[in-house]
Image (tube, rainbow, N blue to C red; front, side, top):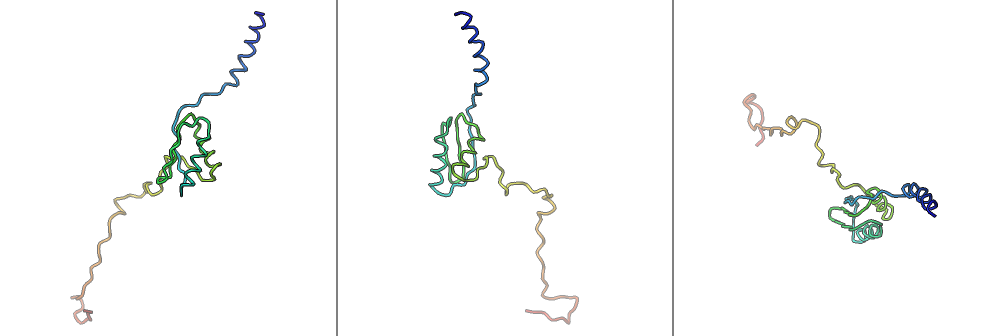
Length: 132
């Protein structure tokens, strides 16, 4: 029986190592999902609560932000929300369009034009009409 045990251990080691999965790290995934009402909020929360490895789900409807913590893969979380809710999902650290700096030189273009001066009377032509 000693040889059979050694041979079975030798045969089972590579197979066991091949099928071992990498342990996922505990991480926080933040994403932007458009949330219009309480129903949308419930739908997003329900889609993520059932997911394996999720510890907590926080939904902030005012910012359209969803925060998921747990042993999860960010790509899978985003795909799941998009599939289950039918909503567009973006990663959170996005830069809003209005905040992006424009490439022009700010000193040259940001000055206001001087106010136009109007003259009621002109000394150049004293015979000209003037409107009062």
